[in-house]
Image (cartoon, rainbow, N blue to C red; front, side):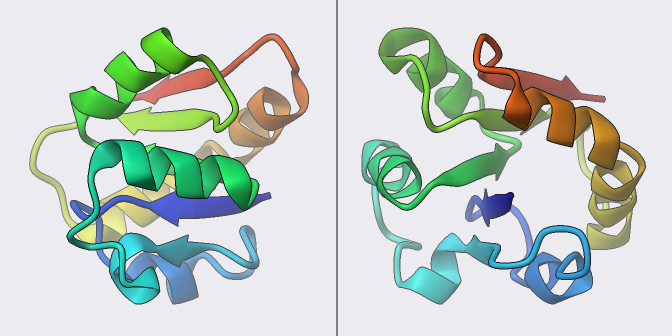
Length: 110
């Protein structure tokens, strides 16, 4: 299960969460930091990533385009990278279940 972190999340999450989500990356590390949301969406779909974002635009894309890719939408305001890491770690089993369930494409984490 690979995560693709949106531009609004730190690239440091890749190494910090490598034990749970090996193969994950961040848009800046892929040279996609200037890419549109649709381009990022397509990249995630083509390369089997779950998108992790705080951006409501990806939720809109999820409704319009369906999935894959699946989306983990972080619905917490300003927070540190450590807090994001903690949210993802503490919800690992929920994320894993969502990833395995073919009828689910969006997970909201608060």
